[in-house]
Image (cartoon, rainbow, N blue to C red):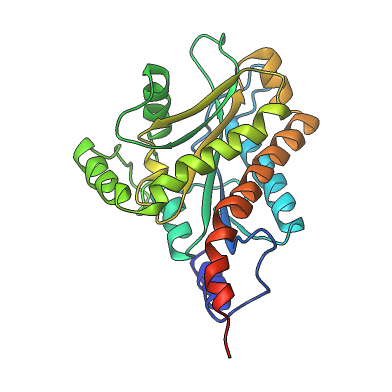
Length: 265
């Protein structure tokens, strides 16, 4: 992973391929969980299948959509393997990505709720459900050294957020979340739970707009069946990809135009 990342970074710094059509240079897509970190179990598959499998499938579909539009895409993991939360956002930072999107499937103890939602980083969660979700997702079983990793304490979160509020990346993360949610909603027949904020460890320290998208509840029988079907995953991935492309077109590209307009001799 480190050698591949270093090689890609060197290529991009030397110029690499032509500028992507929507203004995006590089997008990092993070398939949540992996390896021993199974994620939530499905209730519609026997034997049981887990969140980690479907996040990777959706991430691959998102990557294919973005690459077809001319965007360079890197996945934090290309197979079923352990990867710490810190390593995921660390890869995006090393590659100087324009955007980081972490893909997850939601679940509750009682499989009643449905719907998709997209999060950006904040110290205070939007509501108790968002707080519980972040707590679950922050249980990282793998640290950089392979040891169990505890959730980041609140004071570390506060320090990171203090830095983020001084940077454009934090403001842009909310815009990115809104655009993804707008595009995701028509692709799912289930509830639009909206854009929310929560202290997700995987987003902490991001040097670029970074979001977590929860595409639906895997332990709800009807929604779980949809979001793990080929048709459902393809539709959802298309929505996520179009939201990212909208961000490139509406936010990234306009900012690049004044510099481009100056041109050279």
